[in-house]
Image 1 (cartoon, rainbow over the protein chains, first blue to last red):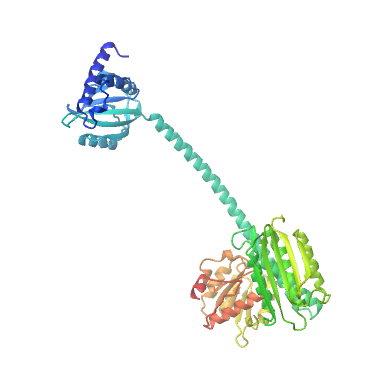
Image 2: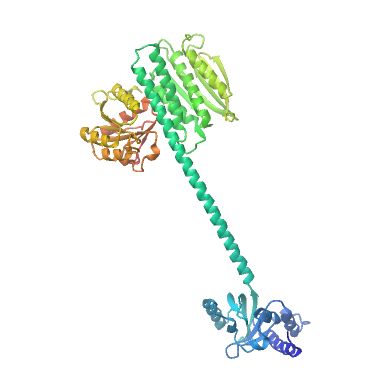
Length: 387
Length: 150
């Protein structure tokens, strides 16, 4: 591409530039050069560097290019003759950011080093992103003699960044779309859950009202009592159901919340002077599927106790203890009443059957024992087993 | 706990707004047992507002879902506009209640127990009589305005 004459010219100029460096660089100690390396060696090294470089003459009119290396010629497509003596602005074009150019000029004017990335144009008019650093080189008395600039073609990096941005935008758009779909599906599911929940609660209220209405219209006696007992069982189920979905957790229900509400209902019908109920139930999160059987079981055991353990005005105490042992829920319901053997055999037998059935359904175990005094029932239910 | 029953001599005049006939009927019986007076039962919004205007009840127990849709909220707003009436929602659909409770005093969640109805009415009666009430009954959730006033 270049003739021999070209090369000689180039080396001469390069030497001049390099001499400027060694003579005048106020920023560098002369001792930075090992004495064995002649300045010309640097000129040769710079010329052979794959990094495009130029040196401009700060003392000449309009800061003309004094020296360029081959890499710079390869980058811009100009010949050395076309560049030497010209100001670098010949590389600028319509899309060059003039703000960046102004920043560069301001730095050059005050003799500060500057780094910038601007769109430049090759001789054939094709644009490229030129990332450059420009440093002033001072002479022995500190005046700026030259500017040295090293360039890098940033076009590929820019393109890669832009492609990456495009890919990211596309990914974000897809994620956004999927998220919107999922949110829509979740909103529909939530609306459906609320609708079903509302209907179940309303139906429980209707069933309870039906039972109580029929009880009111039934003469006092066994039938009326049976209806009232049924209404109470439905009430216990209702209390459990009211607790479900109440704090946004659809999968669990809190056993201590249930017992505190349920026992308030039970106590409302008792003489507080005569029967005391003490509950110590840990706030155990129980699977929602266990809510109904557990609440029925607690209802049967506690109502049975308050009904049958304290006959003939006998006063007493009922305790309900609920805690967790590993993956097992342990419920102990105990009273200090007359005990199982003394209690009259009556339809309460249904209550006991119900409890045994529910415990079996929950894959648990139950132990009925005579307390000292009274009755003690201990139920152990696995917390994970119920599907 | 038996103190939950209304003090005799101070019965509340109550309007029941409920579209389920069975629930309304049972509620009427319960209110009667508690010594209160049911001044009317309405199952849709226009009827509820008309009966409310005609009777100016002490308390209106208002379900959200009525025969003509989820109109209980506007019924509550209309009835609560009369300062003589305390509105209490009674619903299985508390999520439909707006943030300002449409002027209502609070909500009894369905399915409710008779005890909660009794203790809530005793609580309302106490508040209406200007007696500060120490404890809000469980099963009853006061509106933000009512909770702030306590």
